[in-house]
Image (cartoon, rainbow, N blue to C red):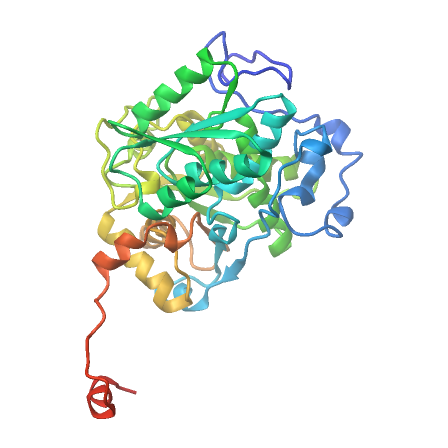
Length: 400
């Protein structure tokens, strides 16, 4: 995306060998315009593979799928009233097979690993990527290795990766150092396929969430508000909506609003300075472990999505994140992990600051299920109250 150099779709390359920049898959839109049939799409099940024509896997026998996608898009009237909005939706990506949006990208990424003849996969992860890659690699019959920052991964996610059979290596350091090591290993060991979001095929799966929102609403929303960690997902949504426009299926594009935790907000700082320079944060800290990333690899793609869409980047405190997590659970019955709640906390701030109007159609992206990080619940909620097992004791505790 920097120097314009192109590579064959079957070349094993993660970043440009010329300039070191990020890669992205470019579709032949002119050819696809003659083959894409939205009526045919809507005859298929609502999942990632509904949009088969836009997915760069060419051997159907290599497709690895667990019916990912097709997640709920819920209109949240109670939460909307609390926020002062009239048209608030939440896209519940925790509905995916391993409980997070990562499954969309892993279906494509692991399929590509098979198509290219790899026998093993590897990623660095704060949790959700590890769980997803481990599951899809198991389904594909591939060995899987994951690098996680020691002591900084939620147990719900770590237990998933372990149960799916991945070899989990706890790196002494943060996510950024784990990712640097993972990329170096895969450049040297050509038998292992890297499946972090620097891999452009991951983005191809994740863009299908944008296509689903368009399908579910029947139009493009005014705003997408999305948590930002390693920054691949916000660019994936922007890519999906742009491809709909290029195919002539919609003229409208949403504004993209990225939300970071205040203790891990390098993109917010870059946005505030309106620059194309990002200064990494050496020791990122936040209760939202999934976005505890100080040097996001896809930062340039994320900024492009925000600038091109006339959107914004905003940060929120841990207190705001926890409050939003509780609100989603207690007002809408949605149990989402802290990183997901960052989008709701961000929307509240964006509305207070007049960036988003109350009558605009806004979709908040809830990237993962609350059971991914159950420890936080034990810290922020009241513990069970012990009572004697008789009706009088119980009655004293009940209020109607």
